[in-house]
Each structure stands twice: as structure tokens, then as C-alpha cells.
Length: 137
Image 1: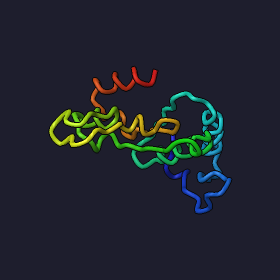
Image 2: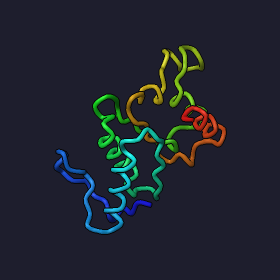
Image 3: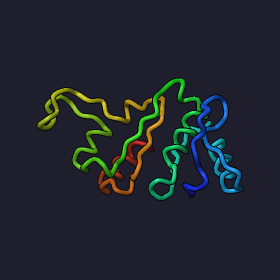
Image 4: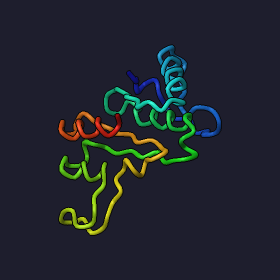
């Protein structure tokens, strides 16, 4: 779990981490980030709104080396209506629905060789969560 009071961004974005803190919890969090970053495993970051989950995800992306080969793409699943979220994630062909004036590859494909951060994934419809699970397995 990430405590927002323990995380702040550092202006220097050089080789050092952008997450700083002096507590044991922050050090444990950074150790976990360093351990998981080099793997290809999907990562679940839990915490309340505003706790710094996206910052942690960006750090995992940066330390993984995927920042050199692919993009970090974030999507707030609670900000997009469920019927449009599937198209936003998986893409669509031109004319697939009204308003689809061109083909769109979807954020999963755009994040290929990079990282996809799904904020507020619990707000995603259950049926779409199941499709997403099948896609990442």
C-alpha cells in the first residue's frame, strides 16, 4: 500500500529515483519497485486516490528499461464510459461504431514494449476486466 504523505516527486530526474522518503515504508516500497521492474510480470499497485500509484508505475517503467523501447501510457478507467473503454483499450476499425472515423490501435497496442497504467481499474465493468485478464495472460 502506498501512503501519499510518504511520497513526493523530486525535481532532479537524473539517475536517482524520483521518489524520496526517509521512512521504512518508503524504503520497502522502493525495494519492491527495484525488484519487480526488471521482470515482465504484470504489477498491481494498490492505494487510495491520490496516493501516488501512477508515480510508482512510472518508476517501475523507468527502472525496467522499457522507457528506452516503449511508451508509458496511462488511462483512467473511471473517466471513460464502459462502452467506450473497451475500444480505447483494444482499439477499433474505421466505422465500427458511430464516431469511429478512423481505425485506432488501442492503448494496449500503443504501449507495446512499454508500460500500460490502468488507474481506477476497479471501476471498469466486470466483463471488460475479464477480457483484459485474458489479454494479459
